[in-house]
Amino acid sequence: MEHTLRVEYSSDSGKPPELISSSLVGYGEPDGATCMSRTVGITAALGVARLLEAPTADAPVLSGVLRPTLATVYKYCLPRLADEGLAFEENVARAP
Image (spheres, rainbow, N blue to C red):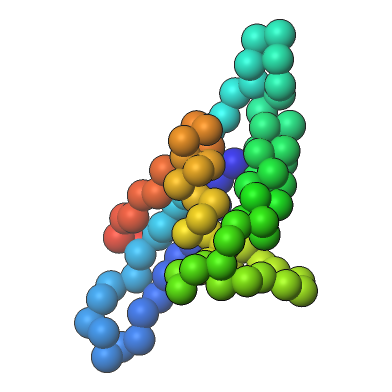
């Protein structure tokens, strides 16, 4: 999976436009789970695990509809996904 974004900053920032690409390369396991089942299943399991975590100052009680863009969700899930070999590689380049 790959996503490429062209990012243009405000003229006040002085930063030139950039191309940011994120790539995820994954493989299934021989005689085991496919890459698709791993990316979906592990992510869903981590979402449930996060909901069941005891609340802390950094991880409050969660309820309702949650999105992975909430810091309390992605800060919990992303390192654990990386431990499972599911992590994006991000590259930043100057945009043409």
